Length: 193
Image (cartoon, rainbow, N blue to C red; front, side, top):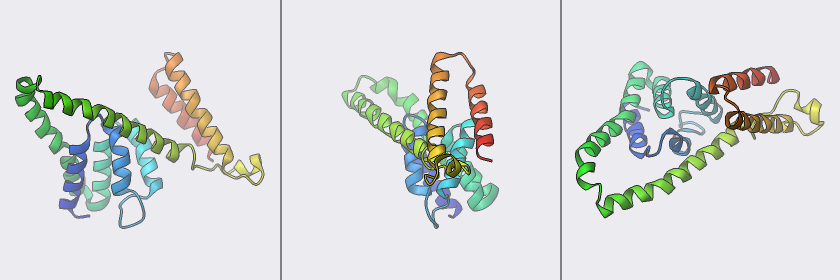
C-alpha cells in the first residue's frame, strides 16, 4: 500500500469508529486480513489483537501504526496513525461547536439512537472474531496425544475453559485485569510449547 492509501484506508476506519475500537475489528478483518495483496495474514492479525490488548492505546491506533510500519516503514506508521485520528479530531471539533446548539434536534437524537444498536452489533461481531481467532482455531502440539485422532480439540476446549475462567475471575474477584491477563499468557505459553 502506498502512504496515501494507508492514510485514506485508516481515515475511513477512523470515520466509522463510533462506539470504540472493538467495533473496528470486523471492518479491519474485511479490509486488511486475508491472502496477499491484503497486508495481514489471519495469524498475524490474531497476534496483533493480542498485543494491542496489553499495549497502551486504542486497538485502531495500534493496528494503524503496525500496518503502516510493515507497509512503508516509519512514514507509513505516521501516516496510517494520522489517518486514524484525523476524522476523530474533526468530529470532536464539530461536536463541540454544534452539539449544544442542536442536541434537542429530533434528527440528531435519531442519529444517536440509530448508532447505538449498530455499535452493539459490531462489538458483538468483534467478540465472535476474537473467539474464532483465539479459541476455536489454535491446535496444541499435544492435543493428538490427549484426544487420539481428534487433533486440535484439546486447545479448543482448553482455550474455551480459560476464557470462561477469565470471565468468572473478572466478575467475581477483585484481581487486577493485568494479573489475569499475565496469568493467561503464562498458562498459554506453557501449554503451547
